[in-house]
Length: 238
Image (cartoon, rainbow, N blue to C red; front, top):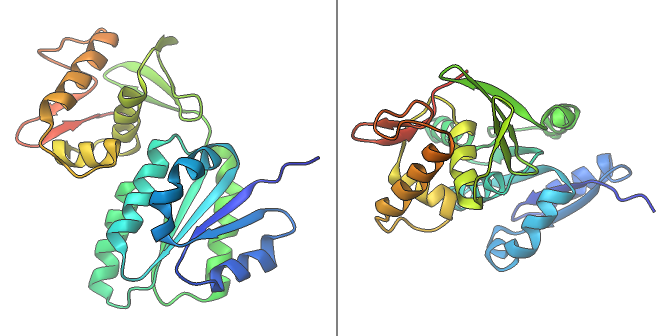
């Protein structure tokens, strides 16, 4: 029995589901959910996302913050596919703000209103072609070569594995996904823990401290996860 890959849709309407079924149903299994189903089903869906989903498509008009939360939670669970964000917002200023925030949060592509079905299908085809490229990624930080495998949650520094906990990997992976950008404690907490910020800065600091020790870094003058005065943390690399 051949197990087919999935396309996962979050939308309040069924038009997108029917469009993708018609064009990709022979090759992919297509599932659709309303966003309000996410909290009750995410424990079941997230392992599915990790295992079989190739592309996630999130269509939104008025519940933008909830859509962004879904993007972050999927990315933090080592999703190796792609995320397409489709906005139905008609205001151009709002579209610009949404696009910046969606891409910064982990979406791979943003389509602004109005979109034709042909434009949506072209974006889906392009992302499906690229999905095989997104496996293990490598970068250089302060003269060290890092390799990160989101599927296995493994990190290697100059070929030596760093054994991170789930939370430590989530923090590092999030900073790597947004390389050269500073994040506040609030942003990191809400992205990694997936909950409203409760001023738990000491908890974040403790995790960062342990990660630095595992990297053999100087905790007073760190090179890999840098302190950004007045903001929080960032990873600067290429």
